Amino acid sequence: IAHALSTPSRADQPPQTDSFPQAAGLPNTANVPQAGDLPQAANLTQTTSLPQAAVPEFDTGNDPTVVRKRITFKNEYSRFANGLAVNTTTLQTSIPILQEDDWKINFGFDLPINYYQVESPIAATLSGVGDMKAQLMGIRSLHDSTTLLIGANLWLPTAEQQLLELPNIGGYTDVDLGTGKFRLEPLLGSVFVLSPKLFVGPLYAHDLSIAGKPQAAAINRGTARLFINRTLENGWYVSSETQFLINYANDNDLDAFQKLELGKAFTNGTVFYIK
Picture 1 (spheres, helix red, strand yellow):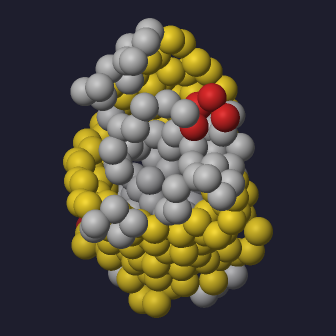
Picture 2 (picture 1 turned 180 degrees about the vertical axis):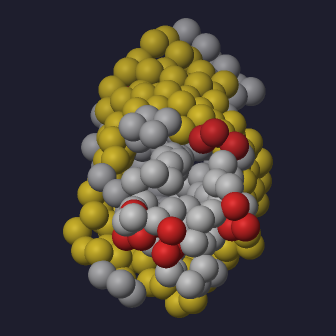
């Protein structure tokens, strides 16, 4: 879906001897000499004289049904009302470990490097590694236009202690500030292809703490996401993500946000984007 697709050329199909196909730049069949008038009628079946345009392929990295080796670096800046500013650089990797006709399995992990500026209660600057995430994702093709996603995230409490003591910023942040807990997050979703250049993907994940520091707050929250991706011309694409987060450990507190993304993919696999 995230590829810029075009209709395959038929130039690789040799013409039949009883009919000669019409093509751009070729004379009308009425003006083509009969096979009996040609010294070598076999020359009609040579396909090298018909040019075949190369079909560029653009992988934006947004289609979860496309399993490929990827390395992604991204930087995100967030500022909150209580004076906390977070600048996070994340290394993401994706490694396919199974690719069958019906099933695909992908492994990945995220390593966030956080830089914090705190204004309250006192001005301070902190930096360090955040919580690492490992992911195992299964992808099952149900139909030409429907794909099932099932998997889990395992969060490791690798964030430094001083980062865990930052002022509370509420239940939601797109940046993982660290929890001090091992967390298991099973997820279930699907991808629906609406057209060759448009797909939507609902996804639900439930984040639960399973071990870790006893003094750290327990984690019990669910996240519902809706992804919409539209591929444009020449490798350009636009996508949106709507997210609702329910914190069951805090009186079912609800947070929501909307993301928009514009990006450009290149044929060598490189993608640049802004959100």
